[in-house]
Image (tube, rainbow, N blue to C red; front, side, top):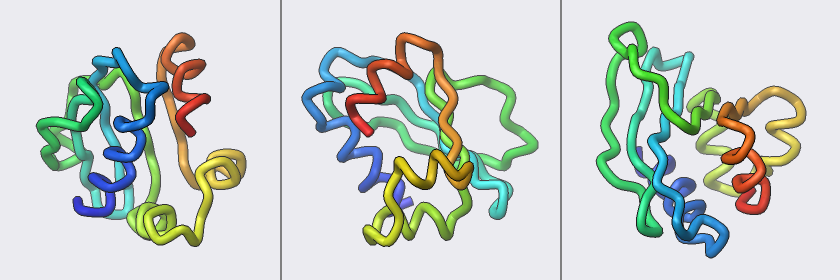
Length: 105
């Protein structure tokens, strides 16, 4: 959770994220968990973990990665762009959000 807060906090603090108010989720298939929260007012709020099989709601911005890749991203051993291009990290969002996130990532 600490690693995820670090990455999402950096994302939310970026000036390009000003004005965003979106639900987000990060799915960790290797843990069977989804972490949900809200990206708003320059920070990430209300992060909570829930079992993957109980999760029904679809977030506006959805990330999927292994917990090892999250740690590698946090420690700087993995860059988001190459991880996304190789499929290690998946990002799903509406077209408008994807265009805005492109400047953040």
